[in-house]
Length: 221
Length: 221
Image 1 (tube, each protein chain N blue to C red):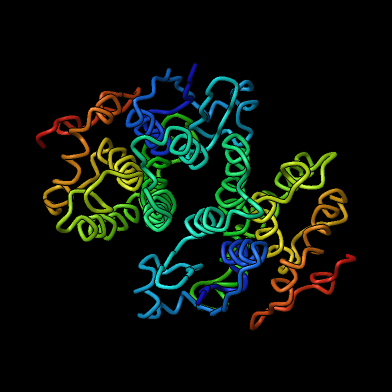
Image 2: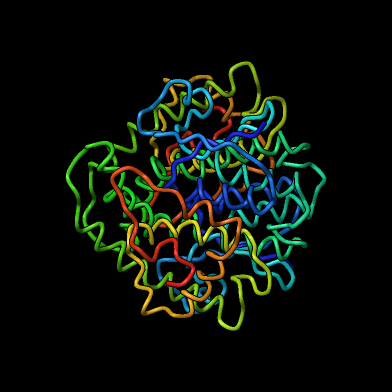
């Protein structure tokens, strides 16, 4: 038995769904509206955050802990590298997207556009949205730089770095905030991501109150 | 040759110094005032953040990437667990302190009290300091809960969870913001940390413009 507590627009939940699917592992998805602070969920994860994986009798909160666990437990198709050096390069990029990109871009857009709608707390800060949109541009430029001459962020093979990056990018794209026309090379990388069977179910998800742009789930965009 | 680019009051740099010392690895410390955006440092780490480890010809930015690399490369005295399950429990706590604690407590206090002083940008937001001090209390309570009946956060052995927690706590203590008298059990855990030979050099560090309280480096406090 394998259950994943997630929220469809949470980039960290998407990262875990993507890695589980890349490893060909079956799982049940349970949507957790974590801001409702459900008591049973607090018992699973006192941090009250998604994702949380429950595999057999083991409960693992936190996408970092989950991805390390999954990649080590199911070592076929290693997504964290085949050597220590490669692993360090991949983890540096995972951290770039999960920390730097998240705190400079995803967090602002999700808080202002999505979670404020669900929680009803406070008014929108258009300043925060403006800052996030400006911050996004050097990150897209960085993806362009990393993929220059290569299919994937680390070169010839999809790794957890691509999975982390795509998880954030796809959430921002759902909110129609990626200026694709200005970044054709990044679009090419993301088209490859979109074509992965492991990523397709993520693009099929919809959440109450938000409709993604027409191009969102299309392979040709 | 092993060099660590760090800043003395950066909790992530402290975490790496602590793990390197626990592994009995020699290293040279290079203080990097990362806010000065030195060009040579940008070449080492485009994220312009400390810590960065340079070991032989391998450059590893980011404390997550560095700690995973070090623990796997020098597996004697494992600090990320002896089983996958144990590793997941440790990583969940590392993430708690490096993400939740950092974003709710350390980041505010460091930005408002330390980095604003060095960069000279903007005035102090006393609101942020007040929020951080309030946020700190449930985190100290959580450490009390985790160590209840045990020496360390994960039970009988020091792990990267203790190292991460102590790195944040020690920075906040340098800034004299830990209400030790209200948390005697947490004080007991931290006294054990302070008595580790691997942690002593960190407590000996001083930075320009900030003097820690008298008790800061004392084993008896």
